Length: 420
Ligand SMILES: [Zn+2]
Image (cartoon, rainbow, N blue to C red; front, side, top):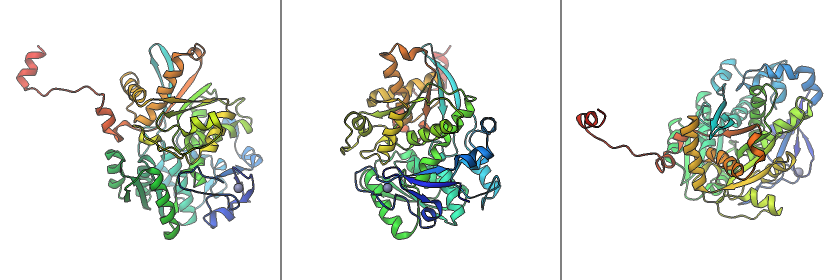
């Protein structure tokens, strides 16, 4: 029995999981389109048999699960299962890919209590491991051992690292302006790395073309529906971390729009199962130099504009999952906020200095958005707020260098003299 199907986001048509997965179909066969510099059309969503989930898992069961090990409740995932076990996945493989299990951090900035969700300590130091984990589990079940992705850095290093753990082969396409730390990380894990003389949008298009020819399994964000699905695991980890009492607002950065879509999908499933009473409001933060979602929320129209921001992780002129991301913001009664690169760097410094977490600029954008909103809103001061920190700061040293204090080099005796 299939416990899930796929449904097109746009035309709403349903497809059996066998048809989609065995034929390696990624977008809706009827209306799907992946065009250059355009959001994807016909993104597929996984739809579950809710009665099957309820027969096998209760709210209390889920609250007792281990954070970072979503496969321990397999009924909520598009994987082949036998009882409560995943088919064709050795248990030692699962141990290797478990995520950081204490992500919830409470902290105070300028007298204000805030919650942070620390995704910087996952196996390859970013949120992307959530998507990669589900994609590699599916690849193993389908008997596939070569996987590809186009990436601004984090998705690539995630695929490279997790493939290395599980002895799979990875092919990573990156733009030439990728931060050096991310590129080194990808190469060090042993991925085949292809640097494109162009931006992320170009790397994405090339990856699409080559993977079709080569028959590699494609992890491209939003294009492979399991990337959205894997990222929904954050919703369950938030639910478990907060013992079912969710925050009122969740601030998250938006690049391609997959994290916010996955977060929304997971929260919405909790709502449909009757395990939460209302959705937290989702606040999408973008850089002013890469603000396609903000403009779309304003005008209802997508217009391609070349993206440029210091926050490479959210630098996307054509967010692949734009329409789903917009739905996530609207349906949760949230909104979008645009921040400048200077505000992002200031936020990076504040989180490092006050909370003790070193984040990359894309992650800092979420706090920059909160800060901007808080400064002109009385209402926010008392609300329960969660800020998702998506990637580690050491992946992009140049941003840290731009504001971190310089230290002098002096002799042993000089220091002794100064510090006496
Ligand atoms: Zn369709």
